[in-house]
Length: 109
Picture 1: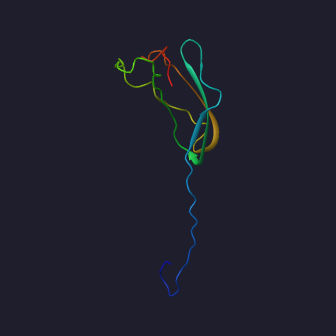
Picture 2: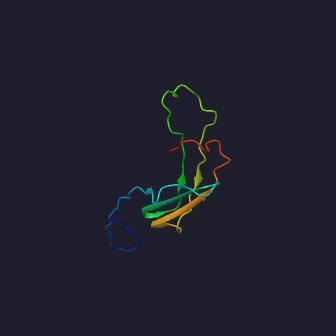
Picture 3: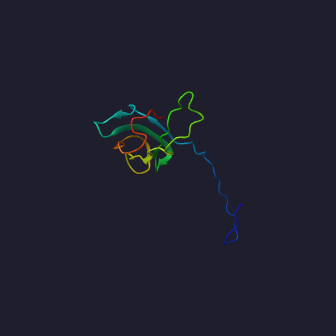
């Protein structure tokens, strides 16, 4: 109950809708885009609209290399292009030149 101005009490009913987590998945998989880039196509979904998406990379584990320290930490992470602002359901595509990154040519996840 909410008490306000006047003599009558005001009543409002609220229905809370839980927020589902956003999802992103490769739509066509990643592929080389010529000699200098990678093309990522992805499907985005969120019940309240996607406002940002990121591509994150990590080196794949190599058996027997657990004790080795990598020469370079951190992948070539970058922002993904959204199909439109606050899209609830859409497919996006981003092309990025990754040839100058130390992970170039390595197996990544």
